[in-house]
Amino acid sequence: MPTDRIDLAKACYRAYATRDRELIEQLIAPEFTFHSPADQAGLDRVGYFERCWPNAGNLAEFDFVRLIEDGDEVVVTYEATRTDGSRFRNTEVLTFAGDEQVRAEVYFGWNL
Image 1 (cartoon, rainbow, N blue to C red):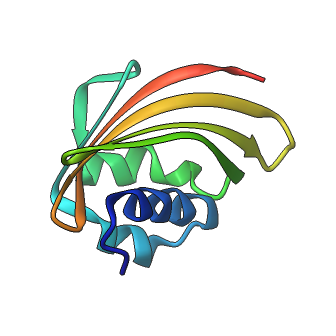
Image 2: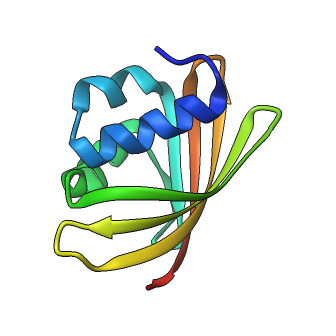
């Protein structure tokens, strides 16, 4: 398991792209919360797996444009390629406690 927060962040995206539930289960904490413009009130870990995880595997690739570690947070801007070949760009702020992700804030970008 990676210990560098940037490596942890990359592992989270890899788990999502490869639909590796076992890996993501290890990477996100029991108290994990997910926030996005579509989920402003936030989702807990169970809500994340119900609402977001079914989309795992629909993204073939993440190209990281920006990875900035600042304390317990990693700011990630990526360009993702969907399995249908379409692409988009997002920015996310991932917060870690030790080796586990405890929060994700997603800021939707645009289609490329």
